[in-house]
Length: 441
Image 1 (cartoon, rainbow, N blue to C red):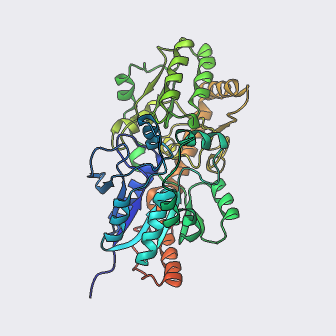
Image 2: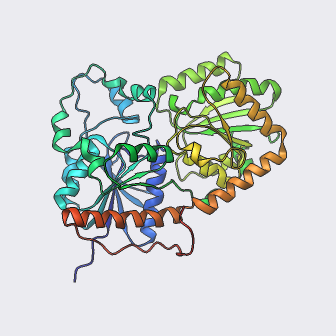
């Protein structure tokens, strides 16, 4: 008797270790959990930002395919911008691989548009279930951010529309056997917009054991940060969405009260012009010796964990944030958190308990954030309370083992829906490795 299909196909728009973000972390950690449970996850994606067609990242196989952006008149700079964020790519060789890949149990799309449409069509042709995760916000994206992503294709004639129609790109969410939202705000809006009941909430997770210990002193020594300096850390893409400009302005005010304070902005530069503007502003404010931008850290780099342990406070000042996986990492490391009261963060953080909220808009925002930084700096009891509450929250609700167990339940529901509507075969469930008496997140 043949064994049941065992391959779970994860499909992000791009996946490279050198340009890492929250979506990449989620896909890799979920894949590792699935491997440990006996499944065979594989990541199929485009060659965007990559140089290798095939490799293993964190023990998970990654296969990449040639692609294009089907617009006339794009410059190399336009293509690079689309690679970094929001590009609606087309890859026919990728679609062919989806059709040929053997032993597929389920397709899991982490992208929409044409790429998501290719997953939808392959799943329907093969009578396989497919689910979609919304990582970067679809129903909950500010107009300004959306406009920025579309800027490289403004005024360009799109010759790829027929392919979008062919693959049913506009029906990906309607036809998915499950739509997964990582943030509560996105969930509420998606349930209101979509005409079905297959929209579910699944937060991101964290490897709590990995982030629990780290050599913060070594990190400080490597970057010339004295032990007595109050260190403020922000770790995220260098991008207008992440609003590092607000933190920089607040830091300038805070440093007038704490001259030895330091600020580190760590992350891949997905918006080079914004990164250049931050560096210019650092020079204008005379902060060259106390504020700096560092390249993004690879997921497996021990310095990623060490950075959280080196910091006295972690700040995520985003204009928009579907979830905020770095908050979980800071919590697991016992680092106090200050975050914007936006998007998924509003449901993730409990103000005064697991973190402090700042309103990131308006003329008074820099002063308000500076006052919060001073409050954390001067109140040792508050720092200890935020650290302990955050660590407990991460351990109780967000360890990857718990998230993987809930994802397997979602997969089983998606398989049941695909069986009812398309005659898809239902595979035996993957053991979760999590005892049933533990609550779901």
